[in-house]
Image (cartoon, rainbow, N blue to C red):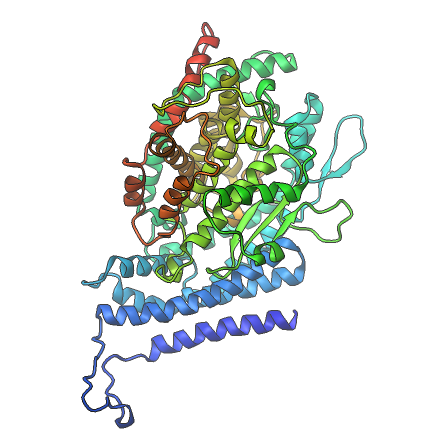
Length: 634
């Protein structure tokens, strides 16, 4: 281990240790020593035990140590993702353990128990205490061996997933190594069913190697959460929203029910299109390898008139991320800090690279202050154009709430979905015709907007764009996110799903919610859910992405109606400072206020799928016309 790493871990442990010593030894009733007596004329200001003042003293110390421990852990995680080596994995495990040793320490838990129901606390104090309690529940020091085993297992599984060597075994060709990006390209672009099947099968080969670890994490995570009074690890994670597991699942089912009529129409149209493409009978459930995504969460390549596959194929990767920054600058946000460009890892590695890295795009708030970074593998193409705009949304969210009024432990989104919602909102804005026309990427035409804020996207050209957005965005995504993924993780933790049902339950849920099926039955020798990185390194939180999809459409509708007076299908945010001020008013709050109140104040309404359904209403009418006479549903 490098000297710098050891020193950094030492400083983190020292900071955590000093605060722990403070928490263990601090006595608000202690009588000052004679040399500490107040000066003549001054009156002592004692801190009452079990008082809001004592709580604030604790929180001040907690936030200072939390920032130090977080910074070391986040830096180690970033290094482990940017350069997958045994040394970086070891450093990550040690730094994660140091953070857990602090947030889950007995001293912290004891103090939090004292303050959780204390009368007289401010809302800001209450919110800090509740977040700190949830952090403690992830790694309580009452079970140090279990926590250490959990952290080590998470790190090893993450590395196993991202360092896995995929081998494509296509019919009539020699086996050859492929990257995840190459697998995705085949599924997106190939018209050869045999090659598609080989690529899809290849994408699942990592699953069996991860199954033992997933089972181990299931038990370890649940044990930690239940020890702290949560129903399960899933229950702990949904507590970020102030909801129980049952309430979150009811919300997921409510969204799915609202979306179902539109999704069934889209599913019907797609299965007829794909059956014609591959010369097969129209199936009830769509074979998974017919779709342009490894998990069927996005269905690109079906709308030639709106196909963005050739857009920006010759663009310089650096231009893509610089243009994303220009978008935010046009709204009035500040330039990215110099350290973003110096410390981020933005571009795809060459084929002969000597290092391996996590290829999943992500944004990082290293020190909860100004050290912001991104880890991406940017290549030419429209998908990365969208992704760079999305990831910088997270970065600007970080920078907006990195201000003294927001305590360190509340430097996060109003809820986790808000973070994704803001990134996805800008991704949507970056995909609309006026902005693309501004960059000379598409012809200017299409709807030009109006003053009603309504939906006029009913021309053939606009229907093609709406169809593409539905296929590659929320309409196809929500049945995976609200349905398959969230229900599977709920069952894994809340119902203690047994190992021998992991794969069976996954495909039952995929059939029920997405209307898709594997190319042939897949038994428990496989572990297809484990191929989704979030099961390992962002667990029991996939509903964040689902809720963010709903939130982004509500924010977008408000911006179009109240600020731009534009059609929701043809809005141009670029250069509009009023849009920037509106967004900044939300971002700067961090988690200092209840998310449902923030949502209502920002949009005038509670969480609802209505804005999304309104956005796609012209498409639903078009699909119903095309599907006339066909059996709809699955």
